[in-house]
Length: 197
Image (cartoon, rainbow, N blue to C red):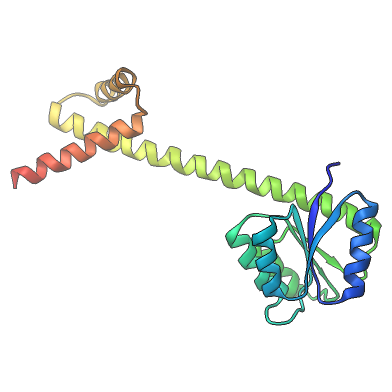
């Protein structure tokens, strides 16, 4: 397993020291400590840790809000470490998008699987986000191509299959994606329609 750079956000010095020792024992290292939520957000931005261990109850900003802000600026697996196990806090942590939740006191035997699972869950989530982005792009491209086909069918009086073949052939001839060509057809049609007014 690779050695991770971990940011610990906790206002209790003894807990931070204990966590740091446990991390070293399992092959990771604490790169910084944040005592407040705001400090956690700043250090996460500055240091780009591989993972964050985040307490909930801290001064000036709680760990859930700090996690929300960190995840908005850069994706990173975050494990909440807290003495609180109320269901509403767990649900809020899930809504924020953290990758794990551990109830204190935490042992080395708890920490290793939690880190492993948090990183795995985080990677899966990132892959799903990427796939969703690809699907959205494919859907957008398909809509553009459908619209361009409709324009060619109307303007040229040709069937749908022929309109698609023309777009496909021009795309190959000009070495540009079909969606880009479809956008050009749509734009040209709008310009020509505008000129007739």
